[in-house]
Image (tube, rainbow, N blue to C red; front, top):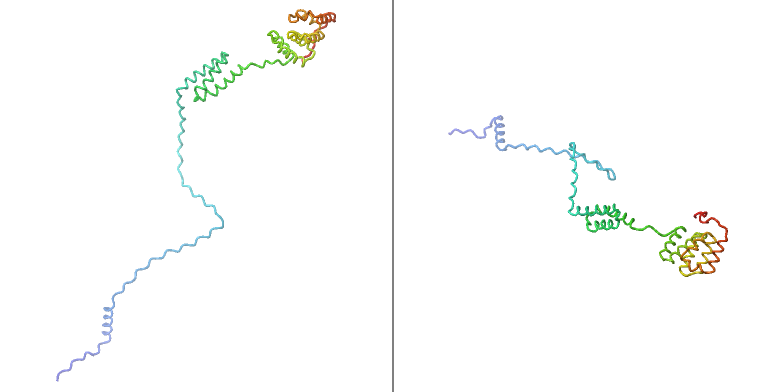
Length: 260
């Protein structure tokens, strides 16, 4: 009879069984890799402080430090503008006008200076001086007011007018003189002569009588006055002369009269 083989179900020692079991599990499970560490989260920002109500002034940005500025060079004075080609001609004409003014040829000087303004309009510098001297010339060319104002001036102007043959002007001047000074014997006498020249014998006798009343010494002038030659033959004037001769001699009132 054959020998019986040992059954496979022969009990294995406990230690060996545990070792075999652990070896089989290690072969069955693959090695597990450890996960990589997660990156650290950034720190949470702190909430900003609430802004106060209303608009707050923004702080001025800090200016960066600057280096000391180098001294700026002084600006050069601009060069004078070039003279125009007409400047020399304008100055020459202007000087001619001044020479005429110094020689008191005022009309020539004024005309020459006016040419400076008209012919050289671009020479503004000369215009102002030329206009100044033109006004000087015009003042010299304007005759002064020759209108007589005082009775003495009016009597003198009337005498010149009579000598020039202008009896009407003489009458007007003498009438104005008597309006200012009614007892002016010279004005009365000359008015009588002027009226006699115009042929007004009646008016002439009235003023001649008044002149002899104011100053009897005028009878000598009356006898010699050529303008009164025709009037002296009348009885009226002869009577006036006789009355003046018999009147007491007295000083001329014009000498004692105070000018108004």
